[in-house]
Each structure stands twice: as C-alpha cells, then as structure tokens.
Amino acid sequence: MKPNWQGVYPAISTQFNADGSINFDSNRRMLEALIHDGIDGIIALGTVGENASLSAAEKRAFIKHTVETVAGRIPVISGCTEHSAEQAAEYAKDVAALGVDGLMLLPAVVYRGTDREVLAHYRHVARATTLPIMIYNNPVSYGVDINLEMTAELAKEPNIVAIKESTTDTRRLTELQSRFGDRFIVFCGVDDIALESLLLGADGWISGLTNVFPRESVTLYRLARAGRLQEARELYRWFMPLLRLDTIPTLVQCIKLAEELVGRGSEHVRMPRLPLEGEERAYVQQLLEQALATRIDLDKYNLD
Figure 1 (cartoon, rainbow, N blue to C red):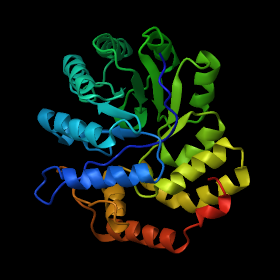
Figure 2 (cartoon, helix red, strand yellow):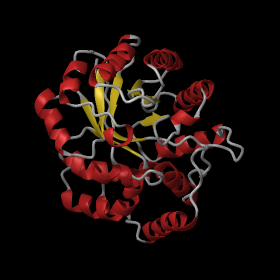
Figure 3 (cartoon, rainbow, N blue to C red):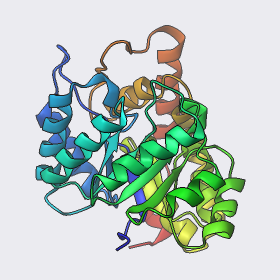
Figure 4 (cartoon, rainbow, N blue to C red):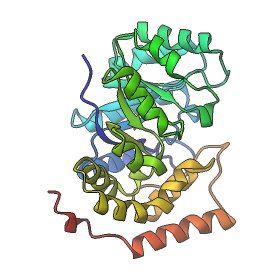
C-alpha cells in the first residue's frame, strides 16, 4: 500500500558535540521544535544529516533515537547511502526493525554505475525489505540520473513508491506525471525550485532550510496547495536568498550555521567538512540577519 507521504519534510541535521560525538539531547530538542512548528515528516541521515560521516553503529543508534523521539507522530524516513547493494539491504533490514516508516535510497555513490548496475542496486534492496522506498534522484551531486526509462523499470517493484526529484529541471516533474500518473509520490528535493515544483503538482518538499525556518516552509507549502499564488510569491521571495544555500557544496555547513544562529542547533560538523570561515561565514550571517529583520508575520495569512 502506498504511504500517505506529503507536505514538508526537513532533511534533518545530525547534531554533534564539539568532540564530534553525536549529541542526542540536541537532536531531541531539534526534533521536538520541528514537530511543534508543524512539519509533516522527516528525512533522517540524508545529505544534511552527514550520513557518510557516521559509522554503521552510529547510524543505527541515531535512527533508534529518532524513531523513539518522534514516537509515531510523523513519518520517519531514513536515508540509505551504503557503499554496496548488500550493505544497503542489510541497513534496510536493520532500520525496519528499529521502526522507520520508509527508506530514501541512493545509488552506491562511491561508484558511478551504469544504468543496468543502478537498476540492479535498487532492485536488490527493494526485494530485501518490505519498507516503502523513495528513489533519491540527484544527478547534480551524485552523477547518476535515474531517467524515465529506468524509472519505468523500477515501477515494477511494488514497494518503490516515491521519488525525491533533484535534477533541478522542473520539466522532469511533468514528464514523471505524464508517464506514470499517480504511480509515485513525488517530492521536490531542491529548495530554490520548491514553489515551482509544488505548483507543477509535487506532493511534497524535502528541504534543508526548513530546519531553520519550519513555519515559513509549511506556510509556503499550504499557500501553494491552496492556490494563493500572490501570497506564496511574497513569502518565496523573502525565502529565496536562504534557499539558495541548499544548492552549494557547503550546504551542510551553511544550514548548520544557520541553525545555530537562530538557536535551533549547533554548527559542529565532521571532517572532511569544516565550519565556515571568512567571507563564506560572513555571507551566511548577513543572510540570516537580513531574513530576521524582514521576517514576514505569518499570522496575516490566516491559515489556521
């Protein structure tokens, strides 16, 4: 059965202590704040969650803690970016036992596979679990485009039910809808084309900057779904300079610094990532100062 995944799903950060260990207390506070602010679900251990920087044991401990904290209030989807199909299948089994609601599955990113190899990877994992699976299609970052013909093959796997579409080409959304109808739940995966994607019929938005401004993100989604375009454009224009941070190589550092600046987390990252400094750091600080100084009163939209 297709799950009811729609709305705004932040790709949550993984909060660390200064020594690099996972700060579970900070993660709990961050999750509670996001749920309080109305988000519809979360992606744990995606790109923003620094998946590849955690050990196998840490990933499972983080997912266990996240599932227990959320306690069924919203869907929890775990990112899966293991180095082989066998490791990904094992991970899928483990997090299913821990209680996640689904899997966001990447190709094996350490090796740029052929179309045949990528399809084999997805099939192997899908057949190893009963979890509903979201395809994460991000050719910009990971060099593999799961194109329409490949998607048609994956549509034969009943538990592959969703797509996080991150090609940055909004035409792909229309192509997916024209080819597959409602076979897949489709999420926009790029922050600075969120409104365009929602207006083209995306079911939801997986977002990095939602970690920093969740109420604005949820309001943007609801305005778009209600067809209130003038108001949606007003909010989107305010948001756009920040949303651009989700599209650059240092997106994790930018988002975590922004989380710290608004009191929602810390900027600690794991190497090889390093905290921002110099002009890059000053730029993010300036964006946050400007955003906070011009923040829109969301109550005026009367969405409650």
